[in-house]
Each structure stands twice: as C-alpha cells, then as structure tokens.
Image (tube, rainbow, N blue to C red; front, side, top):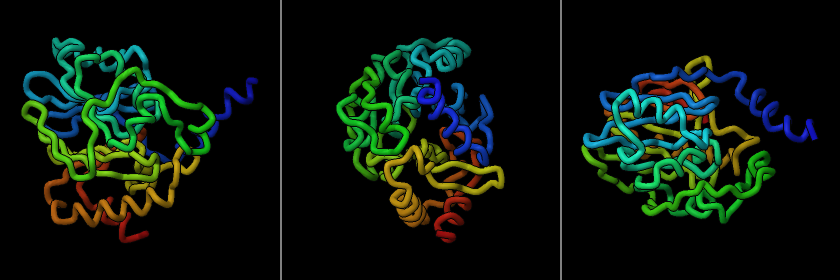
Length: 244
C-alpha cells in the first residue's frame, strides 16, 4: 500500500528533476502575478474590478490564493473568472472556493473538469475521475477571445497533455499550464510523458502554436508554466518548434 501511494510522488520527482523552480510572487506583467501553491502555480490577473485566475491550484482550501486576495483587500467574490488550462486535480482543487466566478475552459475538457471523464495519461489514469466541484459555464474553442473587466484573454487549443488542454494569452503572457515546462537551461520542454495523454501530440501542438503565434511574436513577453519557472519573450517557443 505504501508503495502504491508513494509511486506518483516518486514519478513526479524524477520527471521534474531538470526543471527550473518557480518563484512565488513573480511579476508576469503589469497586471499579473504568479502564486506558488506547493508544487503547482496559479496566476492572478488584475482585471480592474476584481481579478481572474489561471487555474486554481492543488489546495482544496485555496490558502495561497486567499492570502494574495487578502493582501489586495479582496475576497472570494472578487474572483470574477477562472481560466482552467486542463482538468487534472492539481489545477482545479481550489476552484470550488470561488462559486461566483465564471469558469472558462476548452469545451472538450468540460467532462474531465466536471468529473465525468478520466484522464488517459499513465499516472493520472490511476487516480480515476475527479469532480472539481465547479461547472464550466463558458466552454471555449481554439482562438476564442474573452473580455473580463479590463483584460482580454485569448484561448488556444493545445491537445496532448490532455485532449482539452489550453494555452491562454493575456497582456503578453502565454499561460501553458502543463502543456510545456521550462528546464534549468532556459529552454522549453514538452508535457511530461507519464502525466500526459499523448506527448507526441503535445509536441505537434506546440509546433502548431508557434506557427500560429509567429505574427504576434513581438507582443509576447513572458511564457508561464504551471510547475516551473518562467521564460522571457517568444524565442524559446520558436526555438522549440525549430528543433522539433
């Protein structure tokens, strides 16, 4: 039993060994900040009258998010929107703490987020279905643009880590979730094989995303990943696509 329980944590540690560590509280843009929640991160975007989140973290009590809200003299009702990169529980456990927020995710990820489907990746499949406690009331398609307060967020499909994985672009920051990571050499690596539905598909999706965003490359200032440190400018994504 101990071996069964410990296996995902050992696998996670080995898989993440070459990654750069995230920095709690890192400024991502003029209105966005990265919040560390254990081994995962959440992004908080100031949208004027309140904030939006990219993912909700691994803590069902969302303590790190509430701490940042408290520093801003805000409460749970001030979270106006949540953008979920994918339905794995370490990205959705805190979502239920923000019942008034509009929830955005790719339409094909809705069933996993709401607990009706199980991930296909080697390790996530062992965990079974997980109900995040929230409903995706704004299903998205590739290229959809959403306005929340003062912020404009564009969603891009990135199938591979999960079939409904998304990347979100807001104010020059690309939020990848688990669709990619940053290693200690400052380069992009694809989604983790053991935790992904199809790593080869993820690589193809990253290449397609690079091509799609090439005309907008100058506006991209930061690449943000859910389990690692960030990278600057569009160049690391371009270099990844050229190398693969």
